[in-house]
Image (cartoon, rainbow, N blue to C red; front, top):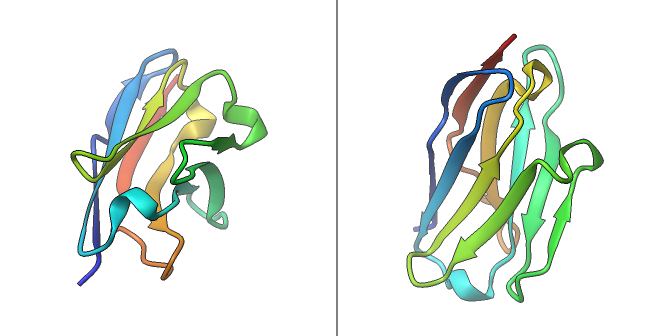
Length: 113
């Protein structure tokens, strides 16, 4: 059974940092691309970043230079390092694996001004 479990969310002030983790199980992790998405209150879920099995990365334009996605194939985990956080980054953050389309349950990130 494929599972993705996010953690690391919390409340920070503007300019602060958080590192999110997406721990996976039940799938061949090293050969899967994994993505991070977010959903703010009253808005649709949107793409944030993705990392391929080869380590190639893609980012939403507004997070480039502030967020970094990485993966540790020995721990079956993907990370999202978020720096210089702003109130507009407030959302529930989800990870997704692309082979079968499974999602995690999400972790809340709240940035106050």
